Length: 96
Image (cartoon, rainbow, N blue to C red; front, top):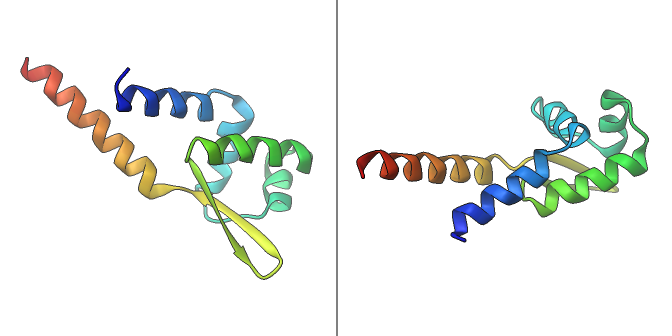
């Protein structure tokens, strides 16, 4: 399996759940705390935390501590690189 295949599989795991996708949608507007995310997506905080753990392990979300609070945001740099790799791979396939 190529590295790109592994990354796409990890992406699939990250967004392959409705709740995780809803969390990503909430984060599209900017960084949020677990409590803010829970309120927006109507989930309890422990469930949000568990889903954030998966999203972080998939590299789709990153976190930054500001004082006592942790803010989560979409990992735009990683997502952009992954999409570029996918486009390049598709272009290579078209040229064959």
